Amino acid sequence: GPEMKSGRQGQSATLLQDGQLLVAGGWRVGDDPTRTAELCTQQTTSCIYTGDMGVRRRYQAAASLRDGSVLVAGGLNGTDSAEIYHPDTGVFSFTSDSMTEYRNFPVAVPITSPGNAADGQVLIVGGVEQNSGSSGGKRLELYNPVTLSFGPAGSMTTPREQHSATLFGVSVQ
Image (cartoon, rainbow, N blue to C red; front, side):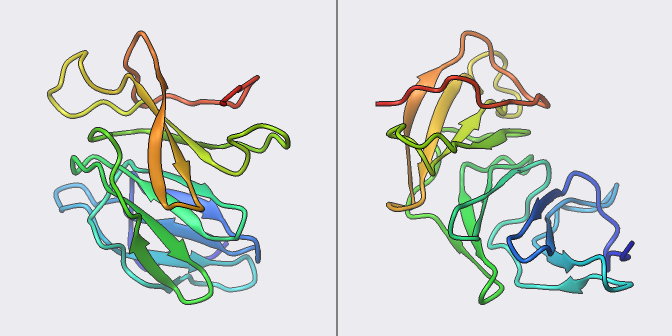
């Protein structure tokens, strides 16, 4: 497979509609998180750099959107911000608002349920703010790619981080 330009751990990897893999953020032990992102394909021996994120991130959530762009949200640098990667230009841009809380190790789950009011949106699940104890990481949020904004989607009884999430019977009005 292709070799990345930068060694990374804690990065996100998202498959784009054209078959390229967007590898964003992460860090090398002892270094700060990075803003860099790379595009990788099976047909090449090395990845290429694409646009940088506006925020240094590691252990963030990422999800493909229907229009081919990618939502990148949160991360261990203690951020509540989110950005959209635009494959046609190679540029990241911030969403119009932030999430309701800082999220470390969140999960982003695209909702693909035709007929559901939330179809095409992304559910952000968990991700506990560093040193917040049990107070953070309980709220669920929906990212709406039409309004580029976040909205409430309920909450969990227990905060979670470094978890997985799967869409199952989501009903959002």
